[in-house]
Image 1 (cartoon, helix red, strand yellow):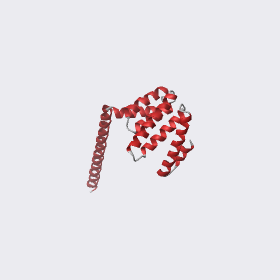
Image 2 (cartoon, helix red, strand yellow):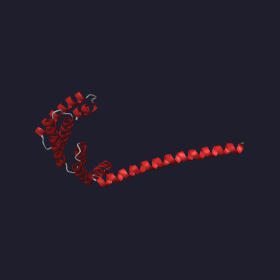
Image 3 (cartoon, helix red, strand yellow):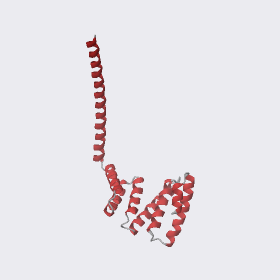
Image 4 (cartoon, helix red, strand yellow):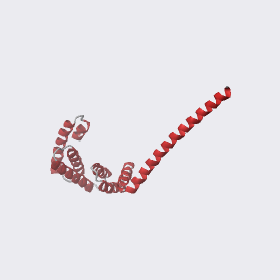
Length: 174
C-alpha cells in the first residue's frame, strides 16, 4: 500500500505513527467491506503490530498486538499455501519472543516452501528452544577462546626463540 511505503521510508517516528494510524483506518474500512481479503488482513495485522510496539498505554498495546496476530492468522487461513503470510506471522511471533509458536509457524511454512530464510529461522528458533544445542555452542565458544590463548602463547614462544637465535648469532660473531 502507498501508506505503508510512505511509513517505511519516513525518517521520523512521529511521521511513521501518523501514517500508521491513517493506514490502520484505511485497512479497517477495507476490512469492513471485504473481510475475506488476505491482503487486507495481512496489512491490518502488520500495522496493528507496528502500532503496538510504539504505544505507551499497556492495555492499548495488548489489544493492538492481539488484533495484529488475529489478522495475520486470518490471512494465513484464507491463503493456506501462501508462504509469505506464514513467514510474516512467524517473524512477528519471533520478534515478541514467542519462540515455540514461531517455530510451529515456520515449520508449516517450510512444508509449503522450504526457502533458505524459512530454514534459517527454524534453525535459529530450535537453537534458542533447545538448551543442549546452546550448551554445545557455548562449549565451542570456550574452546575457540582456548585456541586463541594457545595461539598467543605459541606466538610469544616463537618470539622468545627468535630472540635466542639473535643472541647466538651475536655470540658467534664475537
